[in-house]
Amino acid sequence: MTMNAAAAAPVIRSPSLTADRLWPGGRSSTVRSSSAGSCSRGSTRLDCLRTRWWVRRPNVRATERSFGKGLRNVSTRAVVASDMGAEEEVGYSRCFLRPRSEEELLLCIRKEVEARKLSPDIAIRLEELYYNYRNGVMQSRDPSAREIILSNMTVAFDRILLELKEPFNFSPYHKAIREPFDYYMFGQNYLRPLVDFRSSYVGNLSIFFDMEEKLKQGHNIILFSNHQTEADPAIIGLLLEQAFAYFAEKIVFVAGDRVVTDPLCKPFSLGRNLLCVYSKKHMHDIPELVEMKRKANTRSLKEMALLLRGGSQIIWIAPSGGRDRPNPLTGELDPAPFDPSSVDNMRRLVDHSGVVGHMYPLALLCYDIMPPPQEVEKQIGERRKISFHGVGLSVGLEMNFNEIMSSCENHEQAKEAFSSALYNSVIEQYKVLESAIYGHQGLHASNSIVSLSQPWL
Image (spheres, rainbow, N blue to C red):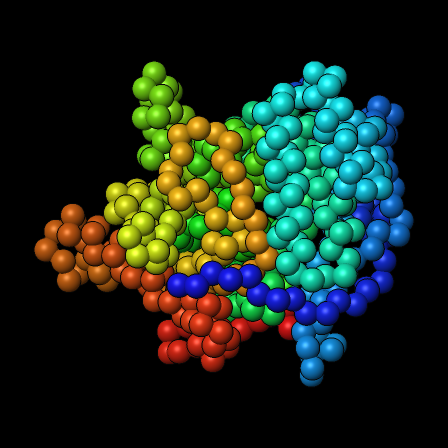
């Protein structure tokens, strides 16, 4: 499979977004925090205005990409991270109020090191993140790329440094923090400039519609998916936000411990609904912590059971236990095999919840946006390569365990067969997305299994 960044389309300006639209109503509200004195995560808006520096940007600019001849009136936004849902609150340092250039922003990081407020190792990782993000966004050939990069990385650095100063402790079930700072939109708009929407596709919109209707009826939805990057939740949200915003924002992601412990990941994780677990792949990295991790996973399972009993939940889980990686011998990238025990544990939770539940296979293709290290690493703090690329998402028909079990001799055989059926559907859908994106077939890659579309057009 060839992995090359695609070229971008021309860009036109969109009307400016006012600060009032970024924070409607001026209401005062409180969100959960691990630090009692943290303005950005646990205080009311009035408290924040009294104690923090705020930047109101009444003329924040957005950009819109047009998609070529015949599609001049069809576009999708590539906006800065502080747009559409969050005022730009600079909560860590005045240095991040309004840097005028890349040099000025990076100088702020170096000043933090000189003041011994930031370790040199973290500073190196932040600078590397800046350059990698810059390179990725510049591949889009967006005329506003430099403005977007500077704005997005300013907010990202501020959130990361705030996290280092006031670490947030994730509970087993974490609900997305949307105010006073909207971490969800921060993550969406940070990733948006990296997605080539011209070469991105969603498969089987009719099934997504059916799932959303079931969700509104109080049913539970489980998505058994492959896992490609740390950015998977944002990619899913971006591909669904035009047609299924309610669905996308309700997803609860079963997340490994690395995205809730790495300070460069945590600000993005704060904007997601998460059930936090320790991955089997990292369970024995530190032997003396194994028992603690098992107990933590038990607490998370109990939280999941409570959520399912309440109904109207949509839970995303990657039964492989980690991200997809290329075959070291062939270089081919396929979804990692599902663990039948993980699938069966999830199925039993659904069955015992007392609420109608539905299980679907979900295929995700977004590896090139932010590929993982070639091998699984034990240490927190991986290097992040970033690219501009097309991405894809597809959902298959609902899978029924009882139907599969009726043709099996025993439960163990049914467990294996059900997991294989889910995985095989993911593989089938993934191949269609590959043909559309890497094979440049676009919508013509559709077949009897997957009907591709671009709902943002």
